[in-house]
Figure 1: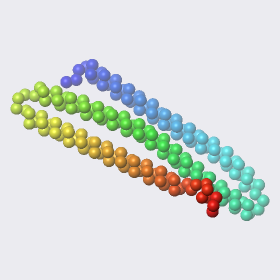
Figure 2 (figure 1 turned 45 degrees about the vertical axis):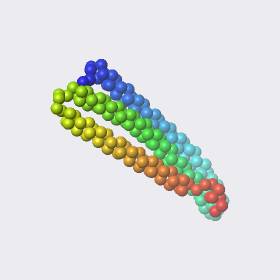
Figure 3 (figure 1 turned 180 degrees about the horizontal axis):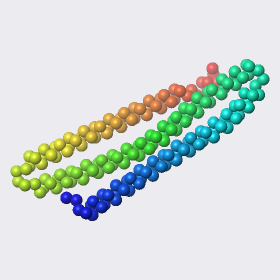
Figure 4 (figure 1 turned 60 degrees about the horizontal axis):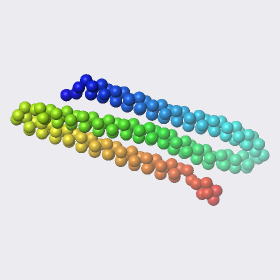
Length: 179
């Protein structure tokens, strides 16, 4: 069984983990706020420049050409913003997943230690029940590891698809000049 010192140590570790995750969450919020602030500043500055350029257009043809030239950078900036937003979310999710995986692994080890301790102190004739309990814990551990691997693979596929889609949505500057 767990001693008072072990329980206090476990609680202290849990609190440290909680504060660590809270710190990561705040760092992500700060990054998101910084990204939004930069995007807003850039949009305001570019809007003023674009408005002046549009007002100085001499004829309809120049106005149409100017509007067309403004659309490509806008699409590229939107895609860049989406990528940066995704990177912030992805890195935060990775940090949380890493902590969750470590915590789960540690909890499994502690539980197996308790099961082993119970097995050592079990009365004679209970070997079958102890063996069944160990087998059930092992099966649950394997199932959890399989789910974690599946989630990790699905996340990797989603990330690959996101990057492929983002790369397709932003044509290179040389290809847009050739048109």
